[in-house]
Image 1: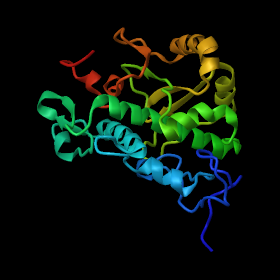
Image 2 (image 1 turned 30 degrees about the vertical axis):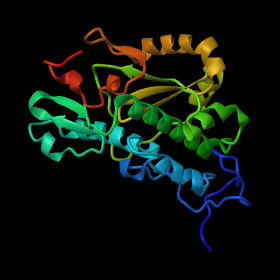
Image 3 (image 1 turned 180 degrees about the vertical axis):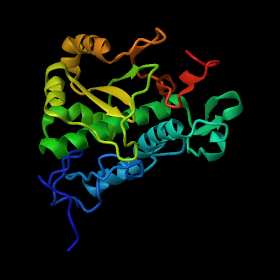
Length: 257
């Protein structure tokens, strides 16, 4: 009998149940190619395949966006030398080592990649939350569902920009936290925070709570997580993927912000 990846038997994305859909595809919390060994559940095969498929030319798959962005960052953490350009391969980007610049390939554009990447963060969030709590079907996550699964709305993503990179010891097996304190802050302020390969992000999970308390939360976070070095450290809203500097161009003296 084929294995089913279920707990409630109701898809956390489309809401369909076992009588309507199947749950045979393994739903990784984030792409296996980045080191994810964590398998979720209650993601039907239709939704699982949706996240992994490019909807049309010029619009990358949501899972591909997550993999390409974080994969590129992990590469540059380990291979920043004169031969980097020979080793770096990406579906989205080309790297010109002689002038230390990154270009997006002509068949994509920055805003499309940015939107798909942001949606991928919310996909990862809800699947991780459901793994830990078994409560990902709750209606309070409808805004997350609409945005990540159906592209409705535009939930905000914030990013802590530092000139010092703090990287976990094992970047080959990253871990996404869903600790009690993280969930408590999310319920109170509407913001979910997580680290990935030394990058700190904040997701606007509950817009109403965020609009009343989220800004003060981010201001308090800035006092804790920003490391004064150059003077341009800040928590910014991610509106363009190139803002995040996943390619570490901030460490080029000629290109420093």
